[in-house]
Length: 499
Image (cartoon, rainbow, N blue to C red; front, top):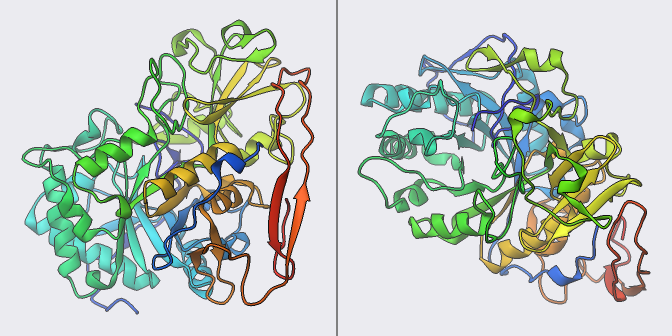
């Protein structure tokens, strides 16, 4: 699975424009770490009162012109990870790609809002030297000091390990990555040493992982990782893409007969079977879309978008440029130190709005076919004018994922990446609503709502009944949708936003 993108998706499979910043040397630091659819069918089951939910994600600093650190909706997150510190041939060196000052600003804003601040180590193009960093006892000791030095220098609350992927992950990962059959066991040994360190023992440790559990020589039971990680994020996306034949959903929730690539549901089952408890698993969700060039007759029947896994052969299709991708930007995007050869076809959710596939409310724009696939529980678009077939997550599909998180007792969600949403948080709010999450305005911690709760204190409660008229089929072929009246209960003195 070799792809490129202008976005360097982290907890995802892509690359970025690599600047030439000064690397960070942490080996000698000894300091201690200072301390568009109706969602009623996916109504939230409130979380257990004794447990907080993980409302997390990754911040991509190369997106800071669109979403400055100060503009993040901090009150809606419990933790965020800064992407990335990348591995280098020297285990004592991690490279922040010239974003040191952005990281300092990120940590300050996070901690001012009582949100845990992590740095994500690795990423799609930053995992090349993970294997060598943990391969020997000497290197592991050095790498522990490197990680604790990073945490101390930037006053971090935790470290997120985004190794893509130990042992090559069954053939996924960049071809230049160093791999070993002993990667998984060496990784666990390193993490145990990190937790035994005086600084490391105070850090929250998390990981971003492939839908398939870690593999490697002599290890199949992964319960040891649950002892060192606060939680592990299953990257429930990049399940299909331009490498796929046929095309398919980027982030299918359910497994469908005849579909390829797997599903979120199967990934959770596999990780639990490998020894990782469900309540320490976090579901990674995409705030971005994947696109293909597909002939209309392959997906549209009787003016309705009906086919969600059409035949696709990348070799016979023109380049599938994504949001802001040009030949020039692709040439500047590095994979294994070389310019990327092909575009990614990726759009952020907000980018779908900016490029006219969606309107400002996040619904299909005029001239764009929309359909929700009941099997994968994901959404699709097709625009005839450019032959673009798009798999993405919208409010309806994320509401289904939020309900799945609750139903399976998972720890929460993590979004790749937070800058992909709109400034009005269309996607983030859909997750909150489906999971029954409310923001504690005093601590700004994301906490579960309780039965009967509508706000805080003794806020006046009003009931608003909204009748949703059933729209007719559009010229673009959007199927007719019927919706019953929806009763909404709100705390009149504390609610702000849109219904």
